[in-house]
Image (cartoon, chains in turn purple, orange):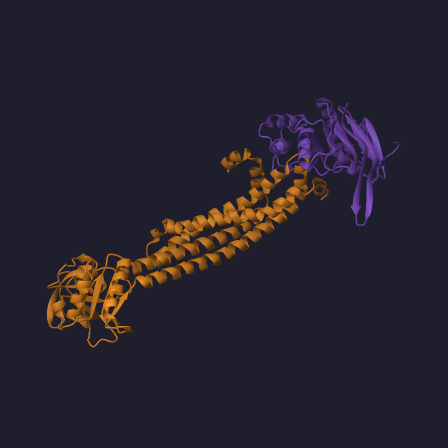
Length: 222
Length: 383
């Protein structure tokens, strides 16, 4: 079954007096254990689509289903809760908190739930991405590839169903990018999660189980 | 610091806030400094006001229960006559009536001399506190001298002192000055030492200020009303009214001082508003990430309010310490007793200052916190 499902999703923005259509009648789904890569030229609506999948933005029309539940009309607070428990995020610029150590950054999304202590899982995840000896390092003491691995560990802390990766290799050299993608693929299988990534990077496409091409807010071939 | 970290771990918003303040230490320190100055302004001005009030009360307190009677403007007499004094005694039953004759002279001893005012009185114990020796209830012979005069002239208890051709033995030394009424060098001799029929003044010492006011009323009624016209036979003065008006003036002064102090705290809270706004704008992307990974708006709000509160608490605590030090100095300078600051009347300004500091900081944090919490994560992440 699809973890996330978008049906007939349309997104419009008001830009001055005219209405810009960023997404038009898009159907999309992602399954556990699979990596889907969204590619397309800039301005094609890739980021908007990723925001819809990540429940960071709501569609103008259409339906969004997470784990079979219709979350289209959820309030911001309900969406926040869904993001916290079900979705992990990996960003191009890592977005780690500079004042926190690697392990603190990883457990950050779980911190506000006082019933959980995910310190052990945070350490375990960091060990699995090969940073077992960097637990107490701050981001400025880590290389770009290491930072992105911390970010990947962070995206998995709350045992999500789906991880969204926005240009995960965009700031990394080719070799580092490759190892990051290998980590992601391995963790996808180990944790049985869906990965949706957005990229310009042809290399990333090689690792994808499926590639979706977006042009002018429409999925090509749909 | 590790203790704080341990406690903060259980309160993630507070921990985030604490770490964020550590990020730009100079900015944090400057914002806290603004608050510190505000607290010091409020608290030290308040404490200085309390010291003034305490000193004024101490100065006037000993006089407030006294009524002084002397010859009135419309009197034919040179002073207060024996008959009038007896009549006063008859009217005033529950207070000491102490007639006095006054003079001024130069006393000399061992080649040094000093100009002193002379008070001839029978019951010096009612009017004077002696620091050594005694103040007799009936002064028939002997004399009292102010401490400072005695020191100046090199005189001690038991030494003779000459006035008006007679020699008196010093039986007591008068201690601290009696408010602004009895300052200066003074020689106290028996009533008979000044040879005149009338008294220059009659001092009535009542139980308290209210009784003194009542006595003033009674005596005015008796001596200074001739039919409907004012006819001042005796001048009757009492300091209770003066104390009251000085007290209310000091209250006004206190409010004005606190007002001035508050302005600096308002300026400081604007600085906090600015700092918090800058810091949330700088961290916009970061806050967007927190929101994306599922941290609720309320938690972002709490985090930033806590940051503002920490600025207030840190600035406020240091401000309280500095103000306390200033308070010791103010009390030393104004009342001569630095420990006088350790009373609720002055310490409460530390509490007010601290409370205002934290309150103003949190208030200043509301807008930046609200703005950051309600920023849409999509927009924030875009930068």
